[in-house]
Image (cartoon, rainbow, N blue to C red):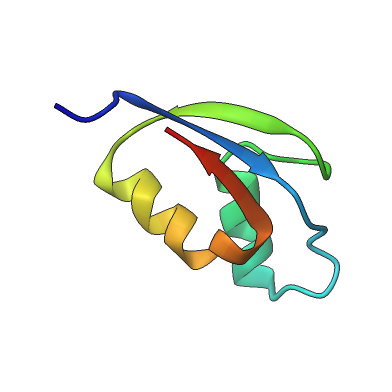
Length: 60
């Protein structure tokens, strides 16, 4: 069985990102560069992570 939670960390700034990408990062609960959040491993969260994977560090 897979892990129930995923830890995401914002490793890059969202300055040059589109508004949709900024909204996705905010939706994941991340604010500043270096902030991290532990989230449930659901398909909705996985989809959000996939949209901004280039900005994040992910640990399962």
